[in-house]
Amino acid sequence: MISFYLNGRMQHVDAEPHLSVLDLLRERLNQTGTKEGCASGDCGACTVAIGEVDADGRLHYHSANACIMPAHQLSGRHLVTVEGISHGDELHPCQAAMVEHHGSQCGFCTPGIVMSLFTLHEHQRQQPAPLTPQRLEAALGGNLCRCTGYRPIRDAALAMHDTPGFRPAWLDDLSLADALATDVGGPGASPSERNVASSGAETSGAETTNASGFYQPHSLADLVALRQRFPEARLVAGGTDLWLEVTQQLKDLPQVIDVTRVTELLTVESAADDLGRSGVWIGAAVTYSRLEPLFAEHYPAFAHLLHRLGSGQVRNRGTLGGNVANASPIGDTPPVLLALDARLRLTGPGGSRTLAASEFFLGYRDTALGDDEVLEAIFLPHLANDQQLKVWKLSKRREDDISAVLGAFSWRVVGGRLADVRLAFGGMAAIPARATGAEAALEGKPADSASLGAVSEALAQDFTPMSDVRGSSEYRQDAAAALLERLLLVIASSAQGAAQNATSPGASSADARDHSDTLATEVMLHAYAH
Image (cartoon, rainbow, N blue to C red; front, side, top):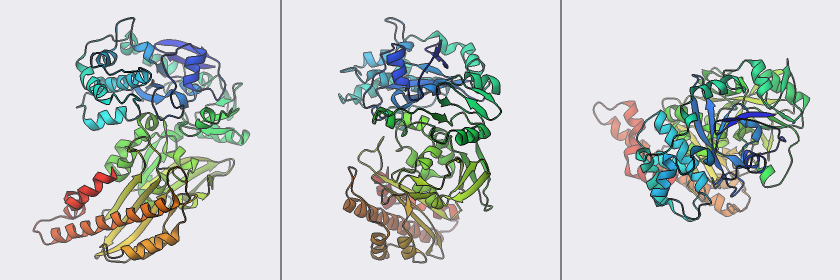
């Protein structure tokens, strides 16, 4: 049994483990305003808003793709659809603005666009801030208008905050947040309340039973116990990849274990790793959206990559741990972990163990994770003062697309020479991997572009990429070599800036590190790296 709120009203629904939110709406609840377009989380026609209570008891909404979100994850949440934000002819400001500015053409994708605008409107209301082009792009980047009517949609987005309209009563109903936090298993519920509310599960110690086959443990101990008891069950976090097996391959998933309610997997903690390095431990179920402020502060290049990882709907549900454990050779984040020398904590019945990210990927979608283990957390070491990180993704679209090739590069310059060079790639082999030959060709060399020939030759020996629909083997090899050429140009321009600062009175080390961002060459490179 799933207990949740739909447009302000409590719902109790039985559902199979593999049922999606979209199918629940359209086939079980007769709410057909939400549309199915691609059924893979790409087009945004099925966008809905999910309300969750934060640690302070406040209700916040985020956009999600209903087609690839497991219905059971609605437990203890407030689901808002396009039907719920208007009343008869009275329209919500985002809907009224779409009408006034002619933002709807054929209308098929309009409900999803409206719901993305609804969540943006709520964010603006709760935390007023300038609606910059970047924020607008992030909010609508996951919604495709097949009629290409983007200009009036943009106009509607910019105008909706000054457009009068209907406001559902539940948006200002404080009791709804209280109900979500207690009655149906929200963050404020006691363990017994949460376990009963979570899809009808009942928990006694580490033993969890659920007639539906969908399990939602709330502790790491219960998760490990379920993993041991049901070794064939599929683990799900955001579902942004796993649920494609349901929508594209028409598979049934008889047993599913949801990790998104496990407290230990939702933490972000500044602490040392087992090697004594300072950094951040990130729980495997922490979403990309939660990580954006952290990455912006400590790993700007990684934060820049997140802007191009899927869409806002995907980043609101997808997790770093899921991207790693999925072990796709074209996953966006694993090459960055390799470049940063990240560590992974795996936990099973026998306890926890920690290993380097480079030891985790064994073969195509094959990892060092034991059958009874789970990925608990990822450790990212802090960048050293003189350490640089660059991440560049090549794909057919700028937003909401899968990589053809992704390069993540880390290095230091010591005495004018390169040190601690780490060059990691996705899309070049069956696993995310470092280009060890190319690294050796750069290690200890002067910080200029003179080593390009040797590096390109070494790279050709490091990888023999495959051909597929995203790029031929030849394209991938040439693209990876071009990324290394770009890297050497960045290194050379940075070294030039450092040399200029060294001869300038009052120049600081920070000036030397940041100087390359002001150079015309670097600006040009970033334009293509966006």
